[in-house]
Length: 589
Image 1 (tube, rainbow, N blue to C red):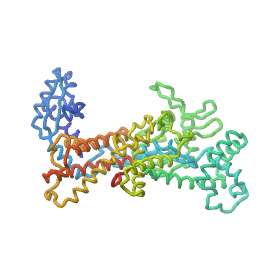
Image 2 (spheres, rainbow, N blue to C red; image 1 turned 135 degrees about the vertical axis):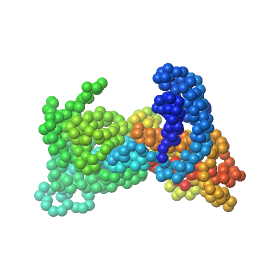
Image 3 (cartoon, rainbow, N blue to C red; image 1 turned 120 degrees about the vertical axis):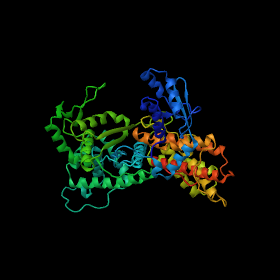
Image 4 (spheres, one colour; image 1 turned 90 degrees about the vertical axis):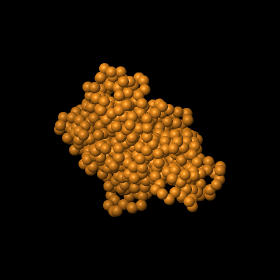
């Protein structure tokens, strides 16, 4: 189904063409003066130079040619050469009736459907999720859902950090605490225990203890490095411990991501890329891409058009150790082999932009990915406290994500219980749903690349541009629908959306019609905040209409049934959008 603005543009282009002007001048945009018109065309301004004619004359030619088109209620030329457009009520309501009947609200992606791998999440095993993991998880999840909604094949990969010194630190600390375990007995040949020798709580305490010890004790740090080396060379006992670490960590990570309503299709790890590294490096050497520089093995990735210095991509350090760049390149080799994706999207901290510029250029230059494969970087800013600095707990530590979710849920619960009209159990359940919406919307409504202030009081407000305000709008619509369905006497004829009877109703119809524009723009610009902005404007339009219209007291049965049809479409649009953003609405608030 075509976007409404495209249908209008086609008509105006035909008008330009019929008047002897270039059709492409007929591009229509949303009006920047909604008090005067709904849409506008500025093509006559550009046509003035082309045709050596005053723009107002061109605009008048086109407006006169189109004034009897059924899609327009009014089309006028205004100085110095704008064409102002108001749509006819019948044309607009007819478009909404088509939306009602269409799959996915008539939203249609016209380009080639792609296979997209989204790399988001990126937690390290043996460490709890903290607030620093929030943005990657919820921005990546929303992009995954959006691309799927538009018909793409999407693979979400958590890309776990499980291969490096942190593993050696944990193994060595465990060895000092529990030397009797069979994993550390080099002569042991039996089966290792199926049960891990630690709980998730113990594991999360072991890592920071080992990390602190390594900074203060050089001998321990050396042992941890040796343990890392033994693990990466496949030591049987150490591999068994590593598997325990993975199993315990992944089970806990899945539980906590579930609380965020975030899921991954594959749980790939840094270690999965390791087998691809030797052949990848050998190939880069043979083909002349990799060379030695100050003892390290590098690939030059700077380009003539660069305005700032882009250092070489380092594959191996002087001691032969690999780096994140090596692993990220090998991961691309693996993804190409397993999925042959058309696009790989990385949702990571914007401070890693240089790193991914180097990796992407290296991958393209060395043929790791095909020339047509898109490698995209969606960098996000930090979530800050009210002091403008990265968000911390009251004692200055990094807050665990589950505590943050609980804090915002508790704040919503307290608000609900102020006007206690429901049981404590229902209040808790509702607070959990609203709290998640407040958290996600509070984050996603900001442009991803920008830092933002985390403010619980503002996020949980039931008014303004917040998640709870969007949910409250949906719940209000549900309530009206339920009351209407309970009426004994309802319109028995065909219920359908009629041409708007008031300005606020028409504004609501116009906002509903723009869902395609919002979702397609959010996808092309990788900008979920555009969905938030759209549904806020839609909720605002609905609430204006609601306050100005006596829906339940309407005496004209056909008109009342039309209102209910329109509300049903508004609700469907809102629920579709919040599902893409990764949250849902309760039945009541």
